[in-house]
View 1 (spheres, rainbow, N blue to C red):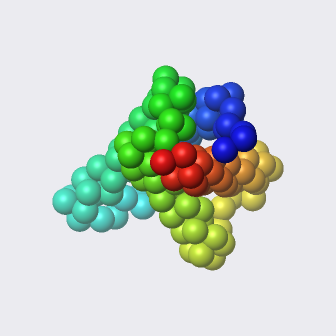
View 2: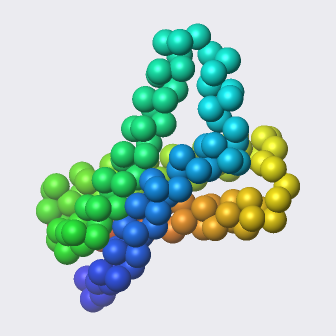
Amino acid sequence: MNYSIPNWLIILGGLGQIFTAIIYPYIRHKVFDWYNDVRQLKPLNQEIAKTYGRYIQGLNFSFGLIAIIIPNDLKNGTTLAIALTGLIAAYWVGKVTTQIAYYPMYQIPKKLIFKIGGYFMNFLFILFAVVYTWLVIYNIYLN
């Protein structure tokens, strides 16, 4: 293969994923009023919802940290690189697909900051899906 995926793009994606992990509680609280909705669930369901929220936050942070610390290992063509980039690509492609298929039917507060933030977050999700899908294809080709 005559080209390589630049490390700066992988690291930028990693920084973006860490940003999504950090901003996630704010979005749940301020944009979606998530905690008030969760309080209406039975106690066990409340804990399940909170746990899944933490899983999402932890995965976003972990994927970002991996991208920042070992970008070369994510594009070295090994079976592990294919598996890991495939997992992360599937995660973000699934997120983007879900976002397109289900989220448009829900109302987000009309404040300008939330509208701009929504476009920015969607841009990030698409960036992550593209970068990791590109990495999987690149790794498969190297293998």
